[in-house]
Length: 229
Image (cartoon, rainbow, N blue to C red; front, side, top):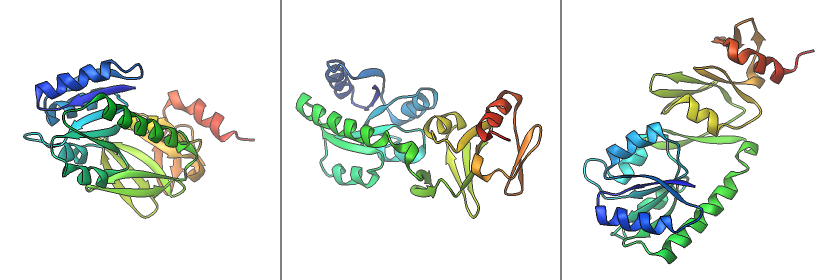
């Protein structure tokens, strides 16, 4: 697993990094001294696990969590035990809480929880729903209700028949996570629900009265997926 360590205390960063380097299944790909550095790193790199200090100047760990959708599984770290309760308010992403100073036994326990979480997530493609972070809360969307996903600048729009949810992130990351046979990227700006397509033209598809472009690079994949007679 590729991991990132975010902590404003240098000694804590170094100590945790040394512990992680002793683990065969962990690779520390970076360390950050504050939340703003972490946001920049996360926007440009894909990681599997984030060790995140709760108390940091400018942007706390919780505020970072609320600031982006580009987040892997998280292990909170802090010298204050009261943050343990706050950590589990975000149990969809936060797997564990490690009090400072981190120790090898406590790290091993946390990594075991990460392993269990990852194993439970292996069946994600068979689930009939996803969670997206919208307006500081996690919103559940049934995949059968999701019409398409659209890139809108620095955000991604999840569109259902009745709702729109705008999430900070990239379509590339969404495509990597949305591994489901009913969904296909048909354009650099669109992922569509194949079961919701009403009509297909040479360079577009129609979904719920919206004409969605289909690029040449994705057209053959689309035709293969729909398997026409």
